[in-house]
Image (tube, rainbow, N blue to C red; front, side, top):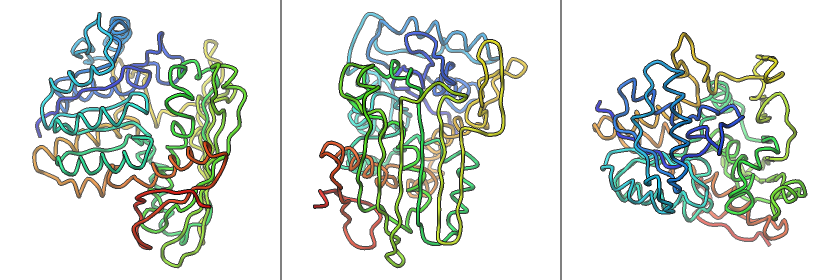
Length: 416
């Protein structure tokens, strides 16, 4: 199949590894940019573009990314076109950038949460396939609008939820299918408090820690029981103090979503707790990540942060590492992270877009295999209802469905 051209929207940590300096997280090489450069090396990607809003930052970003070419054989960051011009600041630079790409090309959106809808819609209207980082949007109305626009335009629109490609998560999801009715799920995910400085521009303003982190495990849980159970009521709780002191504005430290679920086969109830925080102390991992699932006939526990692999150095101290997600360490001068689920998530999207262009697959087939906007509305509904609950002082919100058998929410309303 012919290679696809790729426009990367956003120039931050996950795309480039640059946060005004080289990131000190596990993503100092960036992820999106390096994956796309490697896919270009492999012949799956053609033209590469990258678009931000502040062109004055781009020279430093290009200098930072040039090190990728020095570290990995066959990787050439100089092939990436950048938008806007280096002397331009333009909040709508994405419009000109996407206009320079053609229908059938690909856009990957890693920008602040409140910008996703406008950027993705512009790409869809151009006939460009789109991948959006989680959460794809912040409201159910915008989610369903993008799903409808993509269907009308005949383009693929998916969410970048890479945990679906973690072999342990995928195996757990398949085992969950045999455990009968859903009963209970509990997840926790954190970021160290120094990351608040990285997120200063948007934390507590355009988005919150639940949208940013709970989105991972809300999506996993919804995927694992999709078609067999549905979320119906959401109540949120929060802790405050640390982030507000750091940022100088209101911002929750830790958010827990309490969600009532109903099994569709017999109406039996289940419930879930999703907790996320960005005020954790520095520890052996950048992000604590663990969950527990209980079904009618069994239970599963996963500690994603600790894979039984630890490294200690004079420079970095002691840490648990997870090369199953991302492996930036070169091997004999080569990048060898192609089997990492942080890589496979993007490659699967690029492959699907190329197959659609070649008429070798269909959007319906993609709905069955990938986290498309058409199949992920439940996760967005839970996250939005959680935000509404917090804003209403912890009042519960009910998700509204078209009928008793539907698994796609269409609205939400106060429970009382």
